[in-house]
Each structure stands twice: as structure tokens, then as C-alpha cells.
Image (cartoon, rainbow, N blue to C red):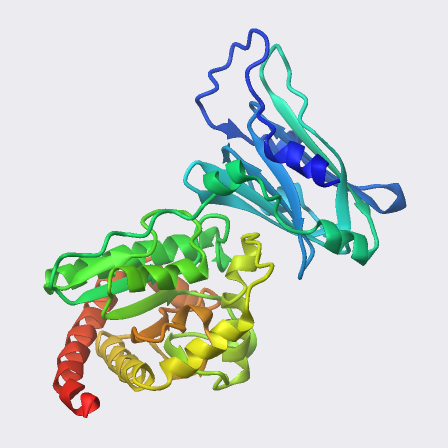
Length: 404
């Protein structure tokens, strides 16, 4: 079976025969000819109709059980999950989109342990159109766990490596790293045809402009619609020697009718049940995108959390307070409890003051309308920029006392 996955990992679907199609264009998914169906004896078949053949690989991941398919490259624009998966079965959920520059990914959550037993991509010699077919078969958990994990093929590992970190800035200016939540294959919250990843990228750009007008340097963890792992987001802040890190989100929560801007700091215990639920969802970003976390060490997170409590935690708390006040002055609206705490993985930097800002909640019609309004975004960004400047000056004044 390992040889089977290795064969898939190096499989290149190349031009065969006289194709009339230009293979430099992106392959597109035809939703009308694509299906997911459950069959007899615990089998599930995924069929994707593509306008042309592309290199691909298939593997499974555990905790939870997932099927992952990497492509170079597929255009998913206009494709809705509900079209491919009208109701859950052997596959309970589906995500697809950009993963790395030049690469796309599909992640299917599995209802039970299943392994691919038939994989193929027949290509029409006349048109170049291709059909990816993957048949999954139910297996015992032990058999599934033995096969789970991305294939250790150097070609694919190199091709799908995270993008290079930004170069360390040579500027002496105060540097803020803005982290637009989600991206690529991970859309975040969605409502009325709007995705959190798009709203937050737009807001981050607006805030970046406001900070630069104020004389600060502002760097984004992603400049476009691509996936960035949680660990890589924090690494960017370290690489550019950031003075602070702000992660931007607009989630959706049904508990308690969440609405209004909220600022979160790091804590091993959540300030309330809704915040705990929110942190758990945020911390699953890598799992959602099909990142292989096999062998990751949870003790590292604990060590970072302890280190962050010493000097950085009170500075982060002061930043959260300043942002909440600045956003309220800009008109908000603010959550009735604008300052909260939880164990957000993206805040676990030991040496960079870090906060996570829910600029609003897509579960609130009012917040959604605000987030879609460029004027509201500009006013709120200016309020946040003013707050950051105020915090910078206060933090610098307190620095001599902290060192004592």
C-alpha cells in the first residue's frame, strides 16, 4: 500500500496524444459532472470532472479521519460545497481551495476510517478533459492508522513547502504584524455569500494603510487568498522582529447571539464557554486545511504559554485594553464584554505582545453589514491605529520599570 501512495505522489498527468487544449491554463471543476456517492459494502466514491489532467496525490490523515487530495492546480471558483456534497454520508464535510502558490487542495472529512482502494484519472485524448475517481473502502481503525500520514516523497514535500518568510525589515520603525484570519482552503465563517477570509484580508489592508500613514510599518501574514499555517503566522512575527502581533477575525457564533467587536488575549483557561468554543474552532485551522500534524509536540505549546505569562502577558493585556477603547471611540459597536481570554494558538508567542480581534461576528446582521461597508472599515481601522500609537507610547514609557 505504501508503494501505491508513493506512485500517486510522483504521478504526473502529462500531455498524451494530440490535445487541442492549452495545458498552461488552470484546470477547472465541472460541478454538474462531479459527484460523491455512497455504495454497497461501506464504499464511498468521489468523482471530480476536470477540464484537463493535472498532477495529483492522495493520502489520508487521522485525528480526525480525513482524505486529502493535492492538485497542481485546480480552479475552484464558483463551486459550492453543497453542490458536490448535498448531504453527509461516508464523507461528512468537504473543503477545497488554494493551499500553496500553484497548488490546490481538497479535504474530505470521513465519517469512519476509510482508505482509497481505487484511484485513477482517465483523460480524454480528444478534449484533454479528465475525471479523477477515488473509491474509499471502510477498514478497521488499526489499518487506517498504519496508512495515515502524507507520503514521504521529497518532490511533493518540496513543492508544497510553506512559502519563504518575509525578510527582516531594515527599518527602525515600529513594526506591526497583521494576521488576516483563515485563507485559501480555509474560508473561516461564511454567510450570505461572504467568507471571513475575504473580509479580513480587506480589513487588514485598510488597517495596514492606516498604520503606514501614522508612520508605522505594517506587514501582513498573507497578501492574498492562500492558506498559512498557525505556526507560520507566529513565525512571521518573529522573523520580522515585530513589536506586536494582531490576528483579525470575524467569526460566527450562535451561542448568546455574539455581536460587536471583541479583543482576546492568551490564557490557558477561557473566560467563558463561548470564548472556549471560539478558541477551539480557531485552533483547528491546520486540521481544517489538511495539515499533517503527526508527531507534533503539545508540550511546546505549554512551554510557550508559561514564557508568555512573564513579560509579554501584561503588555498584551494593555494592548487589548487600548484597542477596545480605541474601537469604542471610533463608534464600535463593541461586544458587551469586549475583553476576553482563551488559549488561542496564534497568540502563543513568548516575546511579541499579541491579541486576537474579532472585528465583528458574521452571525450578527449588523456586524456583517458593517464589515461589508468600506467607510465603516476605514473609520474602525483609524480607531485601531490611534489605539496602537497610544499603546506604543505608553509601553515605551513603562519599559524602564519593566526592566527593573
